[in-house]
Length: 631
Image 1 (cartoon, rainbow, N blue to C red):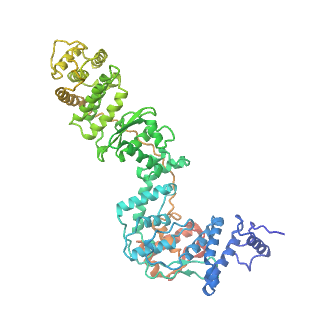
Image 2: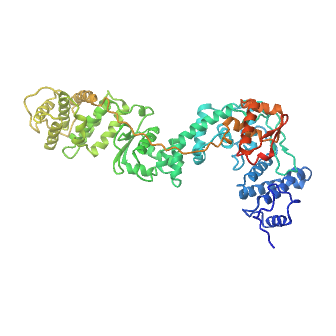
């Protein structure tokens, strides 16, 4: 009858000659059925694996046909790992077996090529990576960023939290950027005392440990603490920067490229599709300005829904990093645009973002809002009025070029949707009456720049005066003063009537340059007055609510600190150490050997009731503890 290959009929370390007839039959059935039953007794997998080890380490030494089987054996072990790799013991032996066999001939200056990929299994760094790093140290060559990245991803002594694995591509890109910023061509690794000696401890008790030849003189840089601590610092910095995006991915695993998630990343880490959309937007803006609805802007960047104010602020910062300004300026407290609201995008300079709003700018903005309200009073803002307002902005030399450019974007939006007087009332209430008189008279002057004052404009100006709590009848005095070319604020007793301003010259409208110069002086005077209102008018931005993730420190072993955990991983990489060899490892890691061994063995007794090492010279690693340590 058939035997159940899943049934545990062997010991943990089986031997074919000592197992029962039932176990042998089950083993042979597992072999004949393709060695692929996923829940088969792991003892049968080890029995087969022992034979593969013997074929490589015994038969291949003298049999050319057996040596030719090594590539086939590697492929078979990798297949078995894909089925039985969840068993930690088999994973450990099989992965190290494959890594050991792949080396073949040791390449000189291996670091001149791309580093090997991290092993998908096992707890040790790939042999080929350790060789390349050792050669970098021996040749005193700087370690390139891609080799530094391969080190941190492969070394279990480097603590890695959730963002490193959840945001793999973003972490790799950010780590390499930060590494090159800090170390240029790369850090030069120390030529430490510990020599690279790579040993494969066989699973079969009948075979001795195997040594990799050709490593003479190559230092084992993974046994140093200084370089690893520098890399750990970089990993931690990158992890902190990626935590918001990692939390987003944890909540939204199906939309990694949505704008809501990408706004948690620096723009240079956005995926190619999103960066292409930004490049197309920047090209469309050029050196000028583009107006579109906020919904269209968000849609171009693959927004999955409405953006919170915090996300809109982040988007504004992201655009600013690409030298694209956005109006309304949410970063200085402007209200968050709705999907249907228009926004103006314009080109900025590298240092424009540092200027932000100032009292003078805020005053000029309110002056412009009042001017737009007056200019649009007749239901149609004339080209002359638009031209004049734009020229005024250009002439306001008390403002920076960046501020004048933003004011033009502000003007573009306000002319489409002029502000109401009610919305401006709160900003103007703190002004003293003399200042209000100057502001009102300036607007009266501005209203007739196109050659006439319409009844609708007069009606609005009356409302402006009323809003400012001024006598509406003084409007007519101010209009008369404006028509005569006098300065605002001059006393005038004879009122003027609407329409009494000079008529348009024949052949079309012509701007009066003298009047424009006068308006420029008046504008600066008004801005100076309004600036008093905005000295302390800076809205506070709401803080983001950060929800911390609970993450495990993968570098720690059973409560040991990072240095002693790293020492333990080096210690168990061999079955035996001379006192001098282990003293060199401890020195490289800036540890005292006796104290380190005492701490490690105390931990082992506490958790497993057995020591890690026995003897003193040589130090022998206890084989029974290998499957118990969470390495």
